[in-house]
Amino acid sequence: MERQILTGPTVRPLEHRERIDWHDHAVHQLIHPLSGVLRVSTARGSWVVPPNRAVWLPAGVPHAHQANGPTEMRSLIFEVAVRNEPTVLVVGPLLREVIRTLSEDPDLTAEHRHHLEQVALHQLRRAEALPLLLPAPADPRLVQLCDLLATDPADERSLRELGRQVGASERTLSRLFRAETGFTFPQWRAQLRLHHALHLLAAGRPVTRVAVDCGFRSPSAFIEAFRTVFGSTPGRYRDG
Image (cartoon, rainbow, N blue to C red; front, side):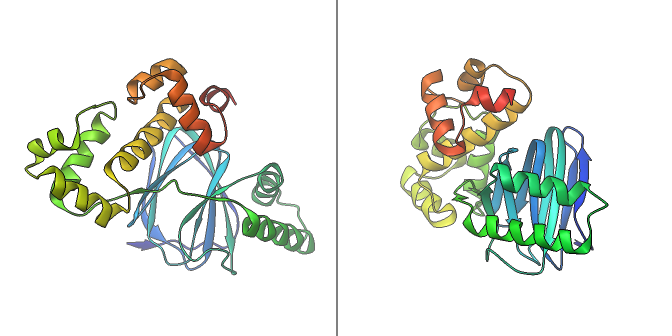
């Protein structure tokens, strides 16, 4: 695995499905897609990160990125840790503008840059942390089941029915989901569907089509679930 050296803020445009392979840094990093959607992966699992969110990555944590749709990835580095583990954080208007300024203004004085970095740290300490991790299991049967659902998130089969395909009982799979992901099976599937929805919305799909493709029982159920987790309606997210 490569250690990438970061000496300051970065701006990196990414094409659809462009991937940055596994690496780590010696400094703490904040990753924010100013536009597009990023999938950020660590050994624990993956996060889907839209433009109103950012991921805090502590120093030394191996990670990889993949863009969904044309994406502009911004990153800041810090010597001081504000979180002890990878965390998805809400990015409000002030933090967004600080990230934008620090990452694209080459004429900032050292004093001005220091003050803005302190503002960023203050905002990051106050930012709401969101449980958007989609945990990655290790048991081969669970990996196979999760791969099946990732291919078709609208698959409505029960855990018992899926178990027959992967060769494990409903009880065994239920126990494995709790032990390896910290989620129940319905919770994990709901998280998967929301992750998939972000990718489809980034591609410009209509909200009603996304609701169907992700397995929600109705567009209104999808809108409510999306608003609860992401703080915005799917339509506003897609168009904004």
